[in-house]
Length: 506
Ligand SMILES: [Ca+2]
Ligand SMILES: [Ca+2]
Image (cartoon, rainbow, N blue to C red; front, side, top):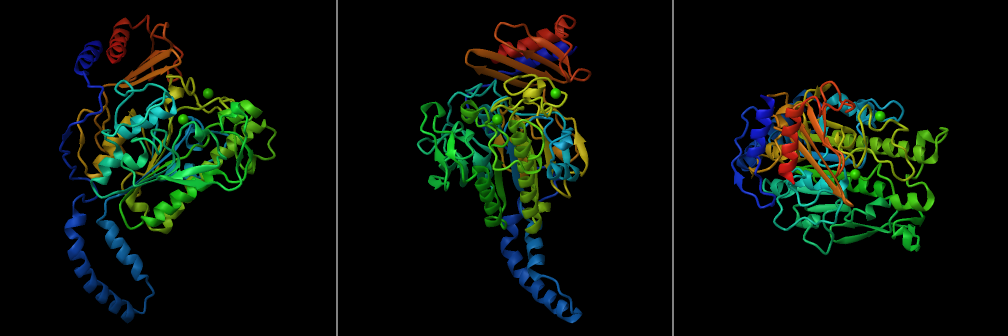
């Protein structure tokens, strides 16, 4: 029965690989706890009505002799009718087991742990891919790598006709911003974030330049932002990505820009992507010095008797954690928590670069594999979603979801129509504790330097093509999340269905 299902799914999947997209109307969920269309309709009458409410309120306060901030009450009034903000925080190469709420035992991540307590953890959330660029492309466009033009870190710039999350949310009046690593088009191309729906982007445009935590400059839209005091090595092998003089830490500047964006746009519905590069290695510095884990100080790990690279890695994760805290604290200060969905995740599994060993802190947890693998460790990532009053605190969902689900999710939250032929399915129902439509299957494809890999997850079955000339393996994740017991020989019919999906995607 199961094999018949898979076979018919294969036949249904005749997707067009192109990104030209048609649209269909999204039926709004009447139970959503916000009113999508009320903002514009009420905007004029609210002002008039609010004036009378204000005078009456002041009089009452005067009579009662209370000290209450008027500014606060009018702010609450506008927030109630406003579209929710979305802040999507993505770490770079952070493994499934790297933070406390996903059973990290050594590295301290108190702010992320608290965030997990305040909202929902997904335990089966997957990155778009096992390396950076594909994963981001999947996130922005709603497709898995079976339907994307690249399956690895090959150069690629977003095309002008691409439909991105940011372009769609702008249709609803969202201010759209991002900081950190972009990697899908620079100032000379139409893939630049300002041409892909982002009003604002500050950070690295080039993915490889983003290896360096002490570059001479970053980008703010089309403007060069110099980083004081950083000097680069002139050794050609360092490719302009190894600093000999380190003064300004790019991550810190990027974080300040994220905080400033939130302050600037506190009164508007906004979409903010914080795509930090921590704890990615500086690969070139790793080759030059043996230590690519660039960090201004080791903080609480300074006195640990670990290799410098591991102190650096732990300090990177804890620095990232502290900065998540700063973002959340600012939302509290601006009274924006109730009206802001905050998501935290990672773009792929843990790395073993820059002199760092991924098993030193058990970065993949109990999973198998790491970055560039399509075993669970390479693609399953932490995912925390917090939205007080909407998402149940201290909750967990085992719903299998992936980066390509983000576009439909963001669009459902914003009440925007989105293309119907996407691979993604909105995970908003899962976040709100409602009935969630499930995927027929999830798919990943990897192609770099002549190596070809693929993986399919359908229900709890997981098939992995680990290499070009290797046979497809089959695992039952319900009893074998570590992918140790290959059932390919014992379950030939299930295997055949999975192989068919892989074959169809080629
Ligand atoms: Ca990455
Ligand atoms: Ca492990």
